Length: 168
Image (cartoon, rainbow, N blue to C red; front, side):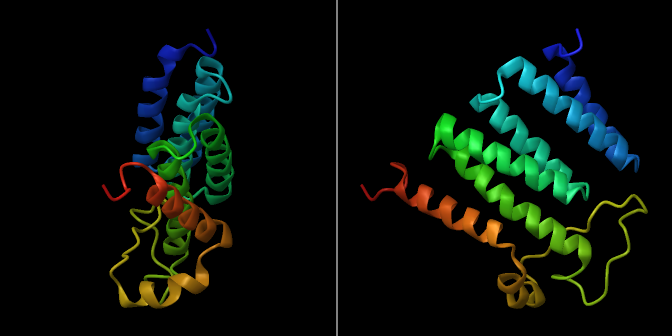
């Protein structure tokens, strides 16, 4: 069928192959279809779909589709906050919101480079950010989206409140 769960692995592999081949628009389309298959298979508000959505959002951000990625991240965080609040999956989704922002800053050359970066291999994939760079540490606090900062604060609070982090 159109939303057959057996399509998930081939769609995932196709998106990666498209991205590696420089067809980022094709990869974005494959990821959006993968999202629809996950939703139809697992249910729109399920933990499994929330985790899948977070992974899809992460890849959209890696491929340079920040607006799409941020929207999917918001949805994933909302789903996981209801389906499994405070779990590792929820905390990871919150941290991924900030990673998307870091990919965006790196892509634009704002944080790690003085001049805009050349597109990686001509494909439009963003450069990796370097959290150890002096430039990064000096500028990231001013450039971080408020949404990303709030997500990191919430992730830290949840992690500190978890039983595995409690002093014992």
